[in-house]
Each structure stands twice: as structure tokens, then as C-alpha cells.
Image (cartoon, rainbow, N blue to C red; front, side, top):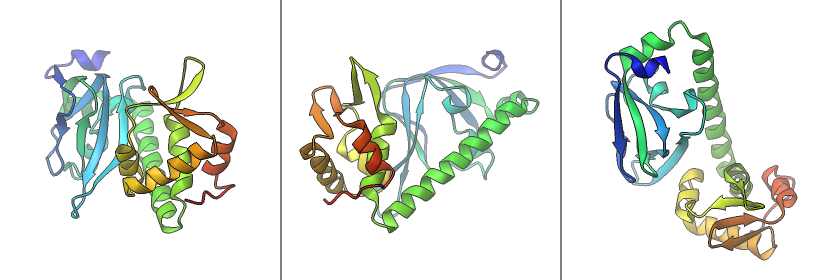
Length: 215
């Protein structure tokens, strides 16, 4: 990629648990994620941590850049970008990033699409909490996080109840109750690899709010 060869771009690594961009920090660089997974977390005034997004290295260029949307606001990060696994990145000065994308409308379009997708997701999550549809949101989250592995539809073990509660902005006890109902109804199962989706159609019905989960 031509961008990675531009002046000022340097390779860097972050160990699991490290903070790549800090909440409240002025952002002068973006990071292109070559390998690893990163969470975007915000610490609220009450001390709660909310996960607002996930960045993974196997996505396209725009989806794998950390901090790009911050550059188009006031330049101050409202979140922590946290390495969920070891992350190998290229650190790109903001001026170099702006220079690279200025004549690439397809990248700017993807950034706009990403921003609107994030806004819709946050709006949906807020409405779900207001309307008592957290269980439906959790079912959707399970489906979106699941991948085929060894002939199973699997949500990998790394997605703990705490992390799922941070994605949805609810207490982890609530997540545990909903998962217990899904397990008792044989829609999901807990195995050593993670959560296995046994009945994708029923989980989809719950995700679409066509059925109500009593927990």
C-alpha cells in the first residue's frame, strides 16, 4: 500500500491490554491495524466502561484504521482504543493521512458510511434499552459475532459476559440471565471453545424482535 511508504509512517506494536489512543487525548496520528483486534471503549462519569466498536485486521482499509473519524471532529478522542489482542500497526501522521485520502473519494465515502453505521447502531442500542429490548439486542450481537468453525456456528470464548454487557450498556447479571434462558431453550450451548449457536433460526427470530424473551 502506497500510504505505508509515505514519509513519517512507522511500524509499531501494542501488547494485549495496551491503550493505543486515550480518551481525552488530542489525536495527531491514526493507526492502520495489520494484525490483531482492538476495542473502542468509553469510560463514563459513573465509572462504567462501554464498548462502542471493534476493529479487526481482516477488514478493509477503512475498517482497519483506528482514529480516522476523530480527525473529522474536534480532534479529541472521546474513547480509549484498547488492544484486545497483540496489535501490529502502522502509525500514520494525520497530515499524511489527509494527503493520502484527499483525492480518493471512495475512501471518504467509506468513512461516511462507517460513521452513519455507527450512529445507527448506537441509536438502536439506546432505543432497545429504553423499550426493554435488551434481550433482542443480545441475540443480534451473538449472531453478528458468530463465525463458522469446525461445522459449528461459534461465538469465540473471548467474548465474556462482561464484554457483552459493555457492548449493550447493561449489567453483566442481565446478560447471564438472558444467556441462561437461551441455553435452557437449547438455542445456544456453552462449550470450551465458546458459545455455540444450536438454533440459528430461533435466535434470528429473537434478534428481529419477532419473539420476546422472558428473563
